Image 1 (cartoon, one colour):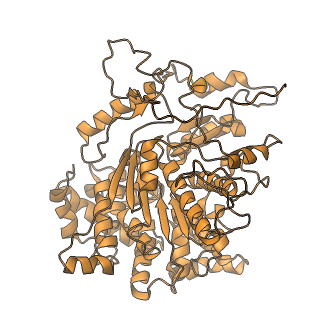
Image 2 (cartoon, rainbow, N blue to C red):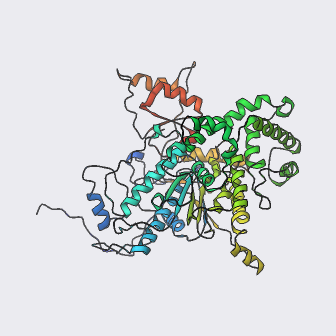
Length: 577
């Protein structure tokens, strides 16, 4: 009659799928770009190739029908073959990929798959009306309502904004998997996410008897440190009780008092550069940048993991100076000697001021966990996104909470995105760390070594298909990477060039003349009578270099546009920037 039903074709095996990617390293600038080479020349917003595709099943159809009010729902989309290989790989693994290649997607889908398998094992599938023709390890099936997974998983990343976005995404995928159709707001208010410790106040600062409802636990690395500290018998902050006494007297809780103390007394790079650097001996700081010294202190002198003595908290002078011979570095022995002298001055000043840096906190936790042992809940799987934002000693803390060394860790990152202050990261370092701090310290590994067996080092996967942007931007990014490879060969892992699906033009550069404010030029004319900006949506962002510039731009545009620093926006996606 008036009904139109979708056409159905029988599955045949002679359908061939062609993948023809647009290589990011195509440098024949004099040749016009072949439109068939880029597969399509349509606008990015209209591109069928950049759309996400979904497997249609009866469970999917039922879920779609629940959104009759127009509310947004999250359903698992089709993965590429290389993503499926990583998700199905059963052992601990390392995932490398530039921005937009799907690292976070792989981690979240692996987490959801483990949740799914745990639910199925504990209660079985809800097969009422389900279409099982396409069931495999990657599909998220509907299970009985109200079920809880018995597996304990932790997802950790450094950025509070990225962590909040991932937490929201995982919650929505879990609701889809369990058939929960309750209407819960999932809009990410990035303006309100200012501090990672404030964001997770509902989660206790301890791994001891953590309610199962908090799993899968999606937290920032700082929250992870606070939970480890709360699990230890002796807290790192007990030594600073006198400084926090006034907060207690005002009736603040311990967590609030600690949070206030951290804001006042932690030495970040900004405090190091403004409060400490000008006070060092001028002969020592001559021709050395403050950022270089801070990186050497945090990542190497205090952040290098030593299997023989992991809790001493620092390299001695001789070991540090010898690094000049062990790795490609622009710092010779004489400069390293001066940096170590600056480090000793820094430690003395910091102690006098009763301040601390993150490495002090981390090394104190190592010392407590080695002497007292770990008494909290053991977790089954740990996922670390943007791992390049962490030092080796920070990563090594993960071994205390998860004994599932063989299968329980997924590290994802990209050394080209090592922009956190004080961090100097290479993936070969983390693989070496995993061998010495994780594998070699387990009883199984030691038994294997005794019998002459070789300890297997986990696989390294690379994602090269970029889903976030088009070939015009990828070519520009690859040209910058080529310069990094040439001038700083030891600082960035060399990966295969990214491929894109859609042809596009190079980014637009706006130059301002006579101290003209480019932001005012773009947005100044678009303000309404009430001072609101028109045409700047939630999926657009203004990226700035540092917090000082962010404040200037925020004062100009207010909350009508999202303004983020490069560090804050890493891992997030926007339509326009």
